[in-house]
Image (cartoon, rainbow, N blue to C red; front, side, top):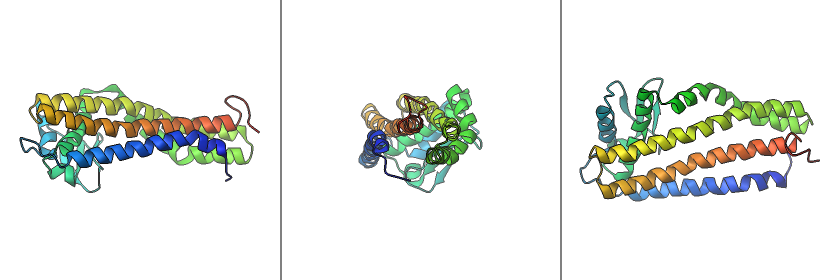
Length: 230
């Protein structure tokens, strides 16, 4: 609604980290997408091996359109892999597929952070859609109560992204360990796979930091944190 240097001072570090994380993720994936697995195992087959060895037989693995759109849906027990990951026997494809299989294993084992994240999803969606707007209008109308309401809603987004961090880190840890243990990748390939997954993890860290800084900015601007800035 108006130019506020404080907002850009708050958000610039998060923006820089987000851009760097995105660049690293795409760069690492592109690099190791060119490295073929020695055992010629595709992403789909790697995910299948992970699930079979974990005794999981009720998860469906499907091809999904979209670049790096891979995900696991606990409600439908569907592991969706983007087409390059699904059908390609590369280190990148195997890394991403095993990471998503890691989420399926979390679900089957009752991993608590994953259960908490799934429970928060509907509320976080409301906070994401309305929280920032309510805080903005609260500042515009000088309504501390409105900003507080928006902050409470947006806090659900922050909580969701904070809970997401251990979920993602644990899925990657499972992928790195089990892919090597099950013979999906060799030791050198495991190192490349780790670089892909470590780079991807930075995007979740950047998202969490961005949300935290957004919340802090509005709280400070409304005088709810550190005194009113007139």
